[in-house]
Length: 319
Image (cartoon, rainbow, N blue to C red; front, side):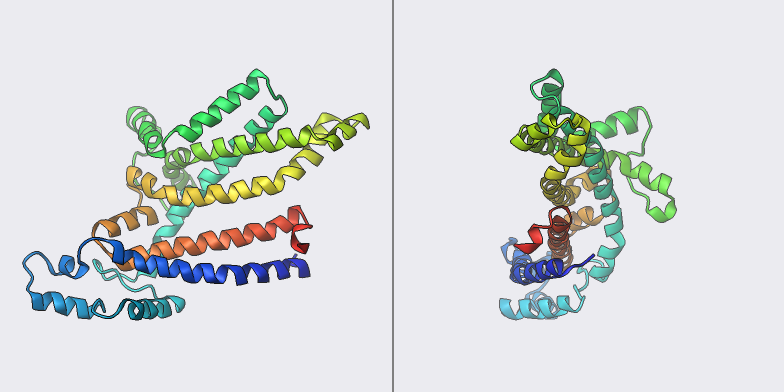
């Protein structure tokens, strides 16, 4: 329920993120100025004449001043027009909307795996500090952080797809083709992405829980006769929920960025492979559109997490 405190918090956050969004659009558009080479020469071809290059530069507005180009692009972006792909001529927004569900499915599955595996491991280690179980979980978490996603992805493909034929090696299926086939294709990419997330959730939850369970008021609860299970579930996890929510937001942002590499390994037609292909061929409208969409998603997610803070800790909304 949106109370006055939460509405006030949302209003403050929107005011704060407005300059961030404007700065993000400026940086996104300015990326094309940092890329070596002339896009007009690339589009015209190797043997193009100067007249043809000038014609292409005028056609795409590349002959205008930078800030004029930026203002035109920003005005169109505010109206939902991210331009057309230079290579295919397809509307960029349509391409993003078509490919994004595939990437979101992989990221969503990886996030669920991170929580389903990481939370029990963190609880197990926190309730037995200094034990062999704690050392084992800490070692596994350190290994998960250290393993590169792309290396784990190739290992999973070689083992479970090529050798044992348990999962498809490449490609993806939309949810419209059925939940089973979609999840089957998303399994290996999600596992490769989730390794770091599992480790981060386990480490952060273990650290927060150890601190809470060792605090003075928890010792008082023990003295009053509350069972360890009641203290853990009703007091311990409640107090670390805000920290865990922050970790979930950070992990989602990282997973969204890491899909670029994972989709390349598994040949998945998502936004990651889309932006890689566009970068290779200097298709700037596609690059700008995808990066801007990801920036807005991250900002929107952070705003949602700020609102959820008030659900777990009502004091946040009054600050």
